[in-house]
Length: 568
Ligand code: B12
Ligand code: SF4
Image (cartoon, rainbow, N blue to C red; front, side):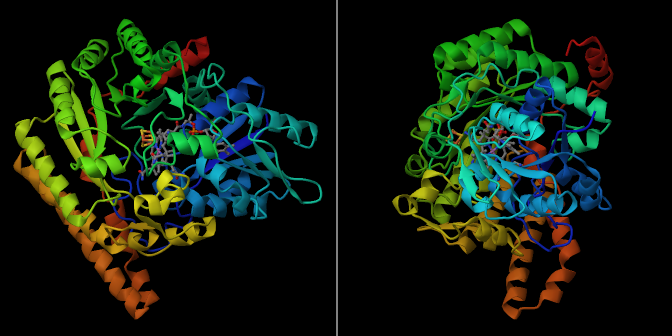
C-alpha cells in the first residue's frame, strides 16, 4: 500500500554535522540533545487518526537518524520516500532552520508532491512561511487531525481545499488563501485514541524503529508523554503555550481536557510496550479538583507499575499529595518556581511564596514521593546576575533544610535560545522589560547558525545582556553542581566532571568571541570537533533527571503479540 503522508522531523540546524556552533546548555532538561531531535507527540496522533480514516502515514525522524549515524544521508532518504504530501513540523521555533532546509530538499526531489507545515511556530509565522516557494500548505491550530483528514481527501480526489478549516494554501493562480482558523475542538475523544498502539504497529509494519525513535537513546530510556489537555489555564510571561497565546494564535479561548478515563487508558497502553516512566503533562488540578481526584482514583484502580511523573504549577495541599501517593507509590513530582525571589516569580506569572513551596516539598517527601524535581530559570524579567546567584544559594538552603535528601533534585537552566514567539513577553516586551532582538522567521533562522549561543539568543532584558546571560548561566550551573557535590546529592566526581564540561564550554564561548573579533573563519572551522565534543557530552542534568528503569525496558515481543491479537 503506498504511503499517503510522510511526516518528517528536521534537526534544529539542518547541517549541524558541518557547521561549528556552540549550542550552550539549551537542552539540558529534556531528553533531546541540542539537535532537538524529538518530534512533536502530535505526529503520533495525526498518524493514528489518518490511518483510522484509511490513509497510510509514515513518520521519519531525520534528526535522530542524522544524529545516530554520521554516514546517514538525509537527502538520499528524502529522495527515496514517495508520497503525495510531505508534512514537516515547525512546532518549536528552534527547528526553523532545519525544517525549511528539509522542505527545499523535498521539493527538489518531489516537485509534484505538496509540502505541508504545521505546529505552534507554523501557526504563528504562517504568512512568512508561505513566502517560501517550497511550502504549499500551512495547517494552523493546536488540533489538526480532522482538518488534515479533510485536506488528504482533497488531495486524493483532486479537489481544491477551499473548505478545509485552518488551512493556508496557494490557489491555481498562485495566490495565498487563508481559510478561517475555525476548527478548535472542545472535546478530545476523537484523537489520541490508540496513538501509541498505532506507533507500535507502524514500527513493526515499516520495519523501521530507527525512523520512529522519538529521541536519541529512547530505546534505553523509553520515557513517554501522556497528555491531559490542549491549552493551558496559566499565563506565564515567557511561554508560547500560555492561555493568552492560545487565545490569540491558536484561537482557543480555554483549555480542553481529555477525560480521566482517556488519560488512564493511555497509560495502560504504554505499560504494555514500555517499562519506562510515563510523564503526565499538565497539572491535573487545571481540570479542577474533581477531575484530578477522578484521574488519581482511576490510576489507583489500574495499579500501574511504571513510574509516573506528575507536574504541579503551584504548591498543593498535603491531602492531594497523599492521594497521588495512593495512586502511584513512589510517584515523581515536578514544579518550576523559576526563582527564589517571589518578585521575579511574580513577574514570570507565578504567584506564590517560598514558604508554600517548601511546605509542598516537605509534604510530598513525607507522603512518599520518590523524587521531586524543582526547576529554576535564568534570563527572565527582573532577574540580575546577583539574583541568579541568590537562587543558587537558595538551592543550598533547600538542600540543607531537607538534609541532602536524595529525592530532592534542583536544576537551573537559561531561557534559551528563544523567548517564545507569541508569549506575552515576546508580544509586549516593554511591559516585562525584554528586548526582542529578532522578530521575523528569517532572522531566527540566521540566529540559529551563529557560531555561539550568545548570538542565537533572540532577547535580552533590562537586567541582563546576552553576554551576561551566557556568563551567569555557566557560573550559576557550576556553583549549583558544587553545592550538589557538597551535599552528596551527586558524587564529587560527577560534580567535577560536569564542571569540567561547563568550564570547557565557557572557555570555548570566549575563544569563539575572540575568533569572531579577528574574523578568521578557518580558525573557527578547525574548532568544530572540539565544539561537537562539548555540545554532545551528556549533561549531568539530564543524567540526573533519568529515573532508573530495570532490564527489559521495551516489550517488543509482547507488543508484537498484542498487535497480532489486536489487544494493544
Ligand atoms: C508537552 C510539551 C513538551 C514536551 C514534548 C513532548 C513531545 N514530544 O511533543 C517536552 C517536555 C519534551 C517539551 C520540550 C520542549 N519544549 Co515544549 N511544550 C510542551 C507543552 C507543555 C504542551 C504541548 C502539547 O500539549 N502538545 C499537544 C500535542 C498533542 O500536540 P502537538 O504535539 O502540539 O501537535 C499538534 C499541533 O501542534 C499540530 N502539529 C504539530 N506538528 C505538526 C506538523 C504538521 C505537518 C502538522 C500538519 C501539524 C502539526 O498538530 C498536532 C495534532 O493536532 C507546550 C505548552 C503548551 N501549553 O502547549 C510546550 C511548548 C510547545 N514547548 C516549548 C519549548 C520551547 C520546548 C523546548 C524547546 C524547551 C527547551 N529549550 O528544552 C523543548 C523542545 C524539545 C525537542 N524538540 O527536542 C514552547 C514552544 C514555543 C515555540 N513556539 O517554539 C511551548 C509552546 C511552551 C514552552 N515554553 O514550554 N515540550
Ligand atoms: S509554562 Fe506556564 S503557561 Fe506555559 S504551559 Fe507551563 S504552566 Fe502553562
